[in-house]
Image 1 (cartoon, each protein chain N blue to C red):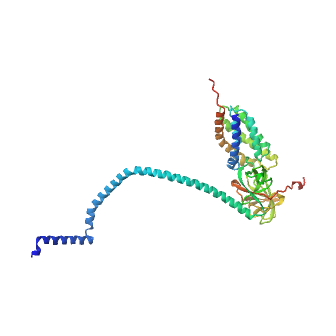
Image 2 (image 1 turned 45 degrees about the vertical axis):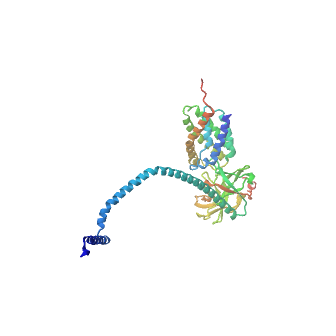
Image 3 (image 1 turned 45 degrees about the horizontal axis):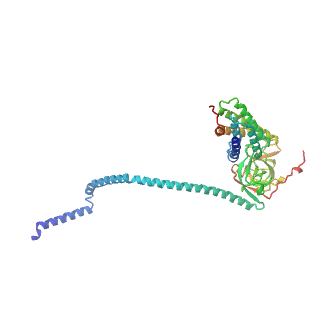
Length: 279
Length: 167
């Protein structure tokens, strides 16, 4: 019975208690007790941590704000530089697209020689539809040469000086172009107007003209080369007792936003006025 | 001499601005005419001399570059400056009001001359269509731009011709 002395009994009780606690803890019976005892600790730790972080931010933030401001200024500067580059690139891309389109037109119409020109101004009077281009006699531009874009007919050279020329648009109220309708194979006259609208005149009444019919230059009169695209018929009008029907034409070229044109170099307009009998 | 230099410079600048920029700003089919506004603002200045010379120069300049019949811009500008001088002597106390009145009357007169000139040359210009689609919008645009042009010209004239103070 020497084994059951007080010291050994204490050890045995301690082992039993610890084993019991471990068993209870591992089996989850002590979780409420742990929660109850840990919650105040966690709350205290959270409170302390928040205060510490606040104090650290208070002490370190001014330096970071300065750094951030410097970084922000640097980045803003970089963004401005990149935006400037982007705008320049977009401008260059726009010019390149126009040049490619003009080049494509030249490739598809190889029978003509072209001189590319930039539009530098418009007629001052609102009654007239003219543009001014930056090529003149020095570049081989002469009176009467047809002017086109990659889309279609624009007009013809009306006046020219050494390094600039004035182009009379087909939308001008005094403009007259001999045209033909591709689908109906009928010829007519294309007239401009004060407002820049285009209309067809001298269309035979018996001819069936439909909206969407393609309008091309006919080459009659010698002012323009044949088969240059002008636009499409929008609608037709038949007046009672009229000898001819008329039609509205939607031009393919946007005359309000022309930036570059092609002057057809190797086409000379023919002046047939002496051949027309006087009335 | 400085006034002459400034005037010719302004005419060139306003022509370039007109041809390159303001002719593209279209209201229905009407546009503003900076040269007309400049001449009106210049003519309404009491201290300015030799207005008529610069009116004729401007008329010739525009006649050279415009597709209008040669005489039309010249007659139009001379008429507009004549209206300016007429109004200036009657509404001299309120120059801004004079500017508006002359811009209104001057634009009508200018377009009247243009229509007549085009009709003489055989262009099919209809009066009613012109009035609705070109003249009225142009009058409105000219009235809008008349105020800044007057301010610019008035400021320039103040610098070129400083007011003499008697001691």
